[in-house]
Image (cartoon, rainbow, N blue to C red; front, side):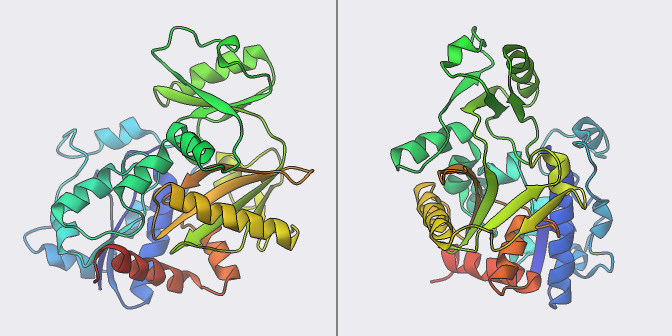
Amino acid sequence: MRIIVLAGGLSTERDVSLSSGAGICRTLREKGHDAFLLDPFLGLPDAGDNLEAAFTRPDAGLSLASGIRSTEPDLEAVKASREDKSDCFFGANVIELCRLADIVFMGLHGDVGENGKLQAAFDVLGIRYTGSGSLGCALSMDKEITKVIFEANHIPTPKGTWMKRSTADHSLASTGLPLPLVVKPCSGGSSIGVYITQTEEEFDKAVKESFRYEDEIIIEEYIKGRELACGVIDGKALPVIEICPKTGWFDYANKYQDGMTEEICPARIPEETAKKIQAISEHAFQALKLDVYARADFLLTEDGNIYCLEYNSLPGMTAASLLPKEAKAAGIEFGELCELLIEKSMDARYCG
């Protein structure tokens, strides 16, 4: 197959996305596919007249990926590096290359890519892509909407509220929630802009910091518990994975820097608890109108209470990512996983 792997973009998760995309692209080429790694924002201005030649370029576009830094990327520098200086999300030749592909493998994370906008555009343009459709992506990306849907469908989730930048009162008292609290952007990912606050002073600072990323933030009760995740492919849950940071919690640095976190799959939890988490994952997957694949994040308290925090419609696919490790525990190697996601995406929208 001719496959464009889209990664990068203008999300704060840009580095993670490029690392995911590079791994996917290499694996697909090893499997015999003509795959090319493409940044949807920077595009391929040097493609020349023969766009089809991109699929067989020896470099496969892999020079885009330079690893995941310990801090979030400088998006203003990325914007400044684009040759045409256009503010259009799509760079040179992106739409044309995606239309030439048999399918586009979505290696994007966060913002445009995971919020449903790109999927909707591709639906209109007749471009085939992997992963969930636009509605599922939009619902799961917005943590406010996710929380409303969870509560309506009796999916256990932490108590919380949301706050807009335009709201006059950003005080702790206005939330009606007691400390400690978690403050995070409404649509962010990779734990960027997430703060655990123990005092009113910390809360006020966290609110200001989180508003640097988005105009709406989520505020939730802090729940101390073991961090777990459960991927779902084609509506069926994978084995539950346990995340054990060596220090602190599963923040950006612990997620993506080697040696900072141990992941154990299957998780060291009672079988009954694992089955409950898998059942909740499948139920929430359906409630959020997701399809093909996604990953839910959980907390498990000492007394056995389960809380579903959120759903990721395009979970990470790096060597350190959770979904590939869960799939491997189920007997699915990384190359097989990439091809399986393509197959299930084709079945969900483009066959029959």
